[in-house]
Length: 279
Image (cartoon, rainbow, N blue to C red; front, side, top):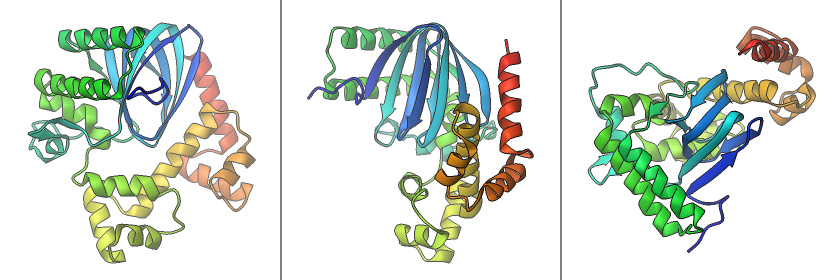
């Protein structure tokens, strides 16, 4: 079975200086930068630098805009299924371990790891196979598993814990169900029904998995997406307000002032000035 480049598990991209790339991830994705330098905007993080020889994780349901600062080569690995480093070490074990360092990240922070010799060799083999036109999905699944084995074997559990912390939780199936449905529900009751919990049971379960009440989590997710729309697109504010179901421009303005301490116009202008003044 052969995939198109767009739908492949593993993709190889070459980008020229000045190009902009927008990603809206429906799955967790790993980005490996083989060559060049890229500036990225992810949720609340503006103009962050992604250097050659490093890789980052873009969590599912995320928006990210990348601008190529130098001619670049990227390998993107899309994780369509639950992440397991090996048969005896699923991702969930990182969150269950009593690691020496506490979790110091949040959903708005992307941590970069440096590649090592094994990952560099793996990247070379992947690029060579794709460049020769060999894009068999089964082969790419094997290469993805190979990469996860290398992460497990050659990176400390502490480093992996920090790197994967934006997607770590103690119930992957429950978290997946929430991510798949939270944007389409009208209220918390509907989300509880989808998960087949009573409302009180759902709130307890949600708090254990996400560390906060569902209403707070949904509001924060909405705020991050709107922040991205304001700062990384040229959409009129009225269009954004309608897209995110605000009853009026005044309601949208009030939401922005509460979440970002400024109006949408001031936020867009201040971010634009900050980007212009960043070397």
